Length: 204
Image (cartoon, rainbow, N blue to C red; front, side, top):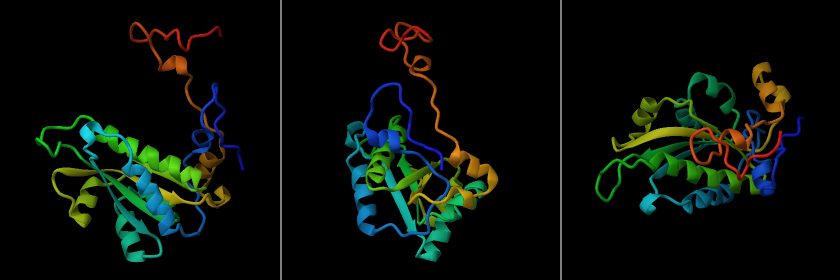
């Protein structure tokens, strides 16, 4: 199996370097205690005006009816591999502030922060999370009766790392290929757009 730990240019916390998103999951249940801790981590994420605009709908594979219901909210390509995960979840966001019903431009950002917390907590517990944008929002709204003020935005597959050799070839390659990221000089600017910040600039 490929080494998926991030090869960082600067020091970061080990949990951040170890976190990655596999397609292969073990046929092994995730305890309710662990799941409660994952969602507790999400609970304590920061959000604009402390609005906490996120909601999660969760299904475990041992409850086959609920699992199939949530699986049906994923696009076909994600169903192919996510059906093996022991836990699936939908990330749902309320797009207007409760306090005044005005649009909340930070809502999706805040859902991301909550799920980021969840991912770090999962890594600390030996669990892996694969986030997906490939869902069918109108299907989720229909089967879960999601109110108009909220929208299903992402999905999560949660579980223990599995054997990538059991995956279809195209997905197997993704799980075995070392992770890569663009360098800081391509996204940390100073002074104007496109000018590399002196904080991160260095001689090639």
